[in-house]
Amino acid sequence: MSIPEDLIPEILSHLFRLPVKSLVRLQCVSNSWFALINEPRFIKMHLESNSERTLLVQTWNCKADRPLNYYLVDLSDESRPVKIFPPFYNPDRFSEIVGCCDGLVCTRTYDDETVIWNPSVRKYKKLPSLPTVRAPGLPPNFEYGFNFAFGYDPVKDDYKVLRIVEYFESSDEEFAGAFEVKVYSLKAHCWTSAQDKWPYSESRISSAGPVFVNGALHWLVKTATRGITLLAFHLATEKFQEHRLPVEPQSVKTLEVLGGSLCVSAYGPDADAQSIEFWMMKERSCWSRLCTVPTFHYEKPLKAWRVVFSTTDGQKVVMEMDYGCKNLFWYDIKNNTRNIFLTHIRNKRWIGTCVGSLLLLHGDSVI
Image (cartoon, rainbow, N blue to C red; front, side):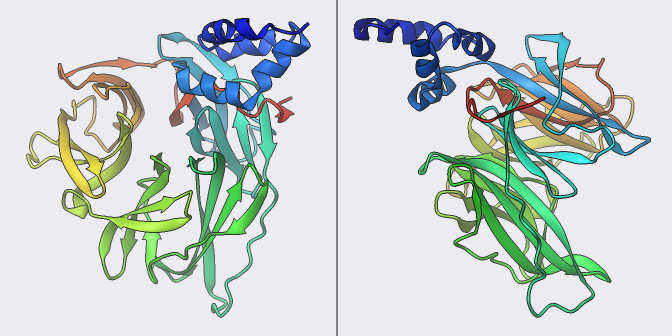
């Protein structure tokens, strides 16, 4: 059965409002519906118009030091989390979430198995293995560590995984002395060397990042000569760029995305109040102070914090605050109010925002 051309715009206007699960079921209506829903232009337009947002939560088995369970949590109904299973799930196998972008989740295991996974459609793509080759000229006492990041290249309409290998001397891990930068392209399904080399001779990537926004990945990097700096990697050009920070680098604790812009958070100037300041990058290295948030003493002193989710206008956020255990709060920036939520999921290790998406419909199915 073919769909009349004059009805397609009307059909599309209704289909874009449907959640992903409904669209997956509608593929069975006819060959025409299947072709329409799988058409790349339709998938992209649905993603751009979709407001379906959930939290992806990974819990942790503290005794075994292994991931325990994965959940999708509807922000409008936190009481009914949906338990999900990633590709090759094994509770006895260590795995981590690299990042989320447009409904795709990048995960990897410590034996270097990396996948891009869409939990909404239960499809995935396994990345080719990438062996680690010791950088030439390094002494035998040098070891290495990995940093992975995941984001979207808007110029090539491609999703990319970045792997940075840090080579450091085993007796002194403060700074790495050599780096290897590789990029995986989902379109090409292969790894290549990045166009640009790592810009610092001695440095270490901090735990603040990676954050993806506006086509670039961002980290805080500690360097031997320049101190702490904000470094971006543009996925389209595969070039690094350094940005100025708005406050003293030592006070910056996290990188965030609020209202579609890069933000940094830092302890406020009033140490007694222990407030958190959020600064937003308006243009290249041009910052403005967005708001100041009290730390809300809760059972114990605050150890760490992170923004997990932001509304489109950036006025309401979900904050993860670590008081010895991780707690989630809805915080209203304008009214300076907060509400704790998601208390029934314990031992939360990783929390991120996941949008409903039809990407990877032609991937392998998660068993």
